[in-house]
Image 1 (cartoon, rainbow, N blue to C red):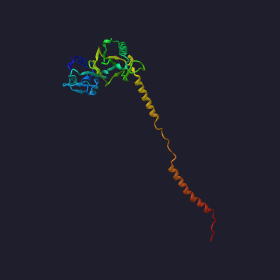
Image 2: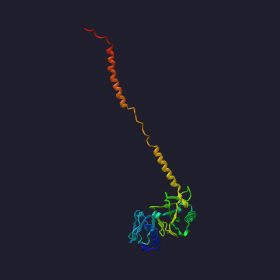
Image 3: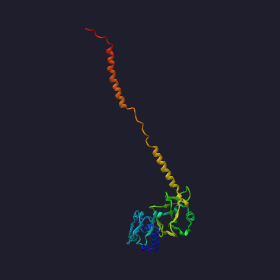
Image 4: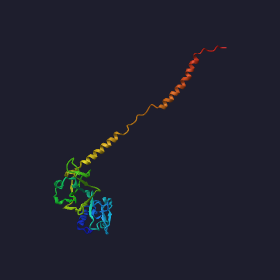
Length: 273
């Protein structure tokens, strides 16, 4: 049985489920509780201490370990502190469908439900066995464990489509229910299942977004351009002006005595005495 870390029963339940999955429970303070603190966005790791003072949670150290009992007691001692976790633990990737990337709530709902249907068919599980949440802004979270680690973050649900969400893997923080969104709405747990195993994100219709593909292409072109701008190897210069000048001086020095020698050899020999 999981020790009591939070007096908020919903937060306590999420803590227990995350620990059961080998995921670190990470605290997050609602933005409404620290309106004058620019560091508190409602989406970054932080907590309220026993006096209600906001503290920043250095979550980077939990990429390779779980919080200790002492840390969990400190993080969740205030019932107003929300909760999240880091992707990557146990191979879990949190698929974050961003409501603002869709033209309407209906479009977001439809697209997400189509992905859920593909996951259920692929993994042969009912919807109720999935871990599904809805964000305060109307987006969604879906926990999956792909056998093939994704090489991209921004995703689309159509080949060569536009960005509609992020695959939050290793080291990426995600806010979970029942935390409070910056707009005042709560994150909601819709299905109380577990992260589901899949072959790959592509197997359930999750593809790299066009923006990431274009960035990859630009990086490739940039690399080729740099290579083409490299200074071509220089041919060795066999004509040294300094050497040529020395040779000219040497020739002129030799030529003068030689001409004098010819002049003297043409003169009549002096008579013998």
